Length: 407
Image (cartoon, rainbow, N blue to C red; front, side, top):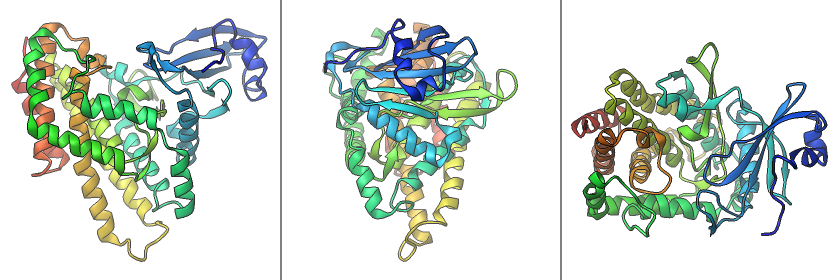
């Protein structure tokens, strides 16, 4: 598509042309414009003026930034992200950034600057503990799950929102990179030479392929709620209330993958990323931090379950949706979280777009962490039929990652 990309030189004039932005920051007194879009898809500018006011401008490119123009991608994803942030913020503005404007002509979102926050993944890699964030993310998932489902929305309004939220291009990325390509490489996979046999064993595991088929089916057909769609420690911002760690605030951002999908997907994505960080702690011999990272699995689930149980009391239709229905949904979502966690953690080892938690390890340590994650993913996919307790998940993760530790 033909539209003008923002640059550091044109940001001021762009803000001047948008009253919704010019009322937030003075375009004639801008002192700093930083392009910080180190993600896979977008341009992101942090803009500050002499009075210390600041905003963020996020512009969708018509291709995947990680790869370039050879991988076209619809910029209309920005509209879906803005809509998801608006809707999710309506349930709890404290847990998502505030949106000031969406420009449909240039696919730009103007939003709250979270510079006082930091990306949770980076903090976890440094060994910092931001307490309460995992519970807050569980609360966020629950509020979205209830508020955008037929439990919390008028059925007609819910169907209209579902139709508006169709996101096929971004969903296809997940369908391919998360569920398919780890077992059917089209040239985008890569591992250390020492892990090539591990990757091949993983790709050839018939039971894992079957499980990923089930996961992909759920992802493509279970339109339960307007989920975030890419919720992990790299899409959560955190800020300690005092100092560098401890009790903290959080914001979920980068919801351009949002669509009507399975509730368990966001939970599983969080669990997977906690586990990936734990694999780093174990590889480095930092047992305290590894145990803390794994404890976040139950903390997120408890935050989710407690919040959802409370919200369920106000469900729109209680004629046939009784207490048993609630228990069935919670049990199903917990089992789904196991399945999606298995998918999300293995793709981060063998597929495109890996995570720094593992990639920044020295090769002799990364070898064992990668091997442990791949074996754990297959175990989770199988064990979910026997037990879906978070305690069992954590024990299985700890035992497996320690067993395959190298270095």
